[in-house]
Image (cartoon, rainbow, N blue to C red):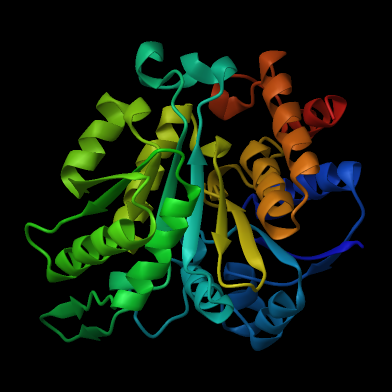
Length: 341
């Protein structure tokens, strides 16, 4: 049966890289696509980053493929004006997507593109598991002339379910990240993760790491990590830090999953408005996000592995987009991947 995929091109380079991903998907199977406005493009057309129609279409889909949102055109500090990022938060909440998975595995062909020494990053293979619907991003916000506040709130059920996701994904070790020396939410996080570990996953090693220590160790010894389990804001920051291990944020895919509904699959990078429309955006993170869609969204492991292998071999053959120090265009990068499928 053909998978029903809602596509959200969004802003900036979004439409360009999304086209690359659907080309690659069409090379491995038959899918139906339904495009919907999202982010800044939706603000321009409808006055909101996420319309009820777009959310309803996403709920009907088997999976959602999202490119990128945002840009200087919509940047504002006015709390009453819509922002593209509100669409992301609304989509996660509306679909109940509480787990964000970001695999970080530098490819051998790109070891020298990383700002870190080869001997530090080689054989790194970690997964950031980030809680996606709680914490400071969703807490109550206040603003006056002279002060502002953002509430950070977590309950036990939210922590339990993301902890299970992390333990289930681990091969040997979960590193739970918090700031338990300062934050009450982090103390609840640490206690809850420890209890889920002892009651349900005693065969997996668990270590607790303060977020500042985790940030340092991610650069000094990334091979140490198997699964990094984090709350929302820490995960947002650490996963972008981890992205640079690969040499370019243009290489990292992500999957956002919930309890049974459609998942959302998107590259980690932004909309890169400075290069939009030039045909030079790196489509590989978008293509790898399509592979995660096949694996986690449609349970098509063979096709997912085939795409990942094709990306790896294209890079081994010398494919380099501008962010990787080369000159390949979006179209040339897509063709190189298709040639290896």
